[in-house]
Length: 271
Image (cartoon, rainbow, N blue to C red; front, side, top):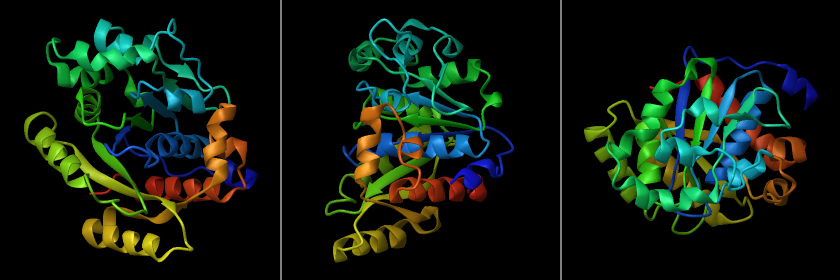
């Protein structure tokens, strides 16, 4: 693994701002955000994770403090604080940074309703920030299609959708795609589904293979070849304030996320 870390992957011509969303809970949004970010950073990319989930799990997994007194993405969205004032380095991995979330964000959905240009506040903050110093900005969303997720869809250029290889995997996805189409039509013409990542793949079951086939038939080339297996190590890592890339770099989950990140890096911004 050390050899893999030293080998740098191609870096994009400009910063890729990728929103990671699926309103279905438990599909691996935060896990994917954190581990893809860590993999990319380990291979030479400058990466920022924007934690838009009030639970702050991405901040926890990156070892970044996010108690109530810490300046957070809430202050950016609601109090117009500059993004530069809240971004901190992740302690475990060079090149990796985080805009943390605190529990204050739980009330942001309601507070945003009365704000001017409420859907575009994250985009405005990103535009005012020097994102050119990053190769990737990954935005981790809450499991809903509320104003926080809409802000992420308006703020991103690409959408990565994690889909778990289980029954009902595609249920509710139509609603997400409809929301994406609405955002694209009215708020962010650049937004496109660039990547689908299959997660929680259990090779022992016929169902997992069937779901994977269904997703590939439906979405085509944007589905990454790499699938993320079910992994105890991946689940354990955040409780130690780490991504699985540092917690157990030789585990099946870490290797799979590294392969998936490699596909994203070498594939560039898919057209």
